[in-house]
Length: 295
Image: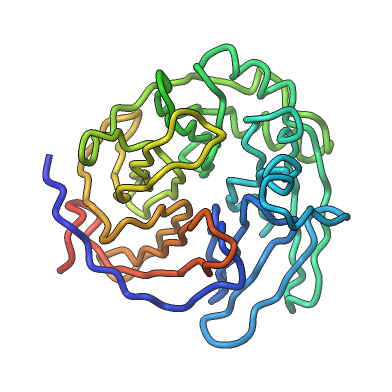
């Protein structure tokens, strides 16, 4: 499979380092970071805004912060203009989700937290080490992406019943195991012998699913490792890899969004440097969604 490198335009630096999820709406880029308690919003031109996802503060010392963080790895759009920020489930304190409604004038946001623990418990019995890093609305399902990094782990796509999720969200109830419709493991290739593991997803206008994946050389889902690079991958239903294109450099891209640009697609990406002294970039590219190539 071709892995021709994609050219990226560096749009701006963000006011956070561990950018993990991205949604675009009305000229704003909404970003969650896995080591923050805030949702960030960046206009195409102008200063950022921040909205607390939950009260409190995280420790500043790196290891203590890593242990305490809720690990909001996934961000996806939801009904009525809302957003869902979802925890990874990789540790006992990472089972929370948050429904976010940002005011139309961007002045404030209301947040409602709910539990993902029953769903995560069921999924933990289906994969070697649970670590959910992406989410997207795709057809009749909300899909979750299991990141397959670490020895013996595998990337996977989990489809949840969208109507069932909607009912749980409306009731502000915990997400249960009966939301699961199916789980499929994914083989996404490798870079320099290190497997690509999925980090996020976004629905494409033509019905495909766009994935980001990183080749991170790490022994498990908790410890960070050297990133050898990332890729964009198109998936067609139910879980067929159509193309894979390498992204430049060795950044670990963990958030992706796709929007129409004529018959092409404009792709926005954010990265996690695993270093709080390094600001995460927001990058943009324009592709043919059928081939993954610029035109």
